[in-house]
Length: 258
Image (cartoon, rainbow, N blue to C red; front, side):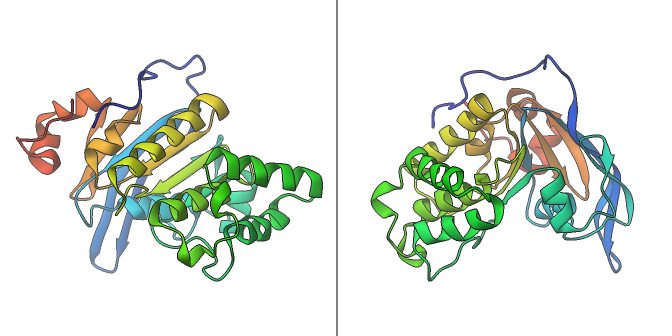
């Protein structure tokens, strides 16, 4: 698949982190999940998270949103340590949108009813709410499916719906957990373009993880590779695929990006 992102932001005018993970460790009983993990995401940056099954990718998302707490380390969002912030306050105060790998919508409601249900919670002004919903339906090319129940939408349509739901509150941070899973090539390409456009048009900071390494690397500025509870490599896509440790632990010798 051709590279979607035609540019990589390597140097930010404001090199200001919007998310910082400092020396974070987590264990479930005797099983270690993350061991002294540190990284940061700058404002307006797209970061990818890669790693084998069980490396802790989805756990990082759960830690950022507040679903679970680390044993050690700090989670800092917009210069505020949020370890003790509950989920609802964390997402509301810091404008975090989250797209889970599975679900994220009401199965028995239509696409439009889904957007209205969440919109009524996030946007009090009815006129603004209607305009926002119609804008997102148009943006994600969902006009023909607005009256279709979510359970009858295609996989790609459901994924676009969940992203639209996450964007209703105009988030500053968007977390995408395996957005390309079980989708066809054309739908993946459309989602990649949506992700890149969100950065360039809305200046949203985005973090995504996926097992589709080529698809992820095609739309991010930087990425990190998790393995054996640690970050073993970080950098631009080209730096990562040429990193010896990353190739040994994750990509393999036959992996080609371009």
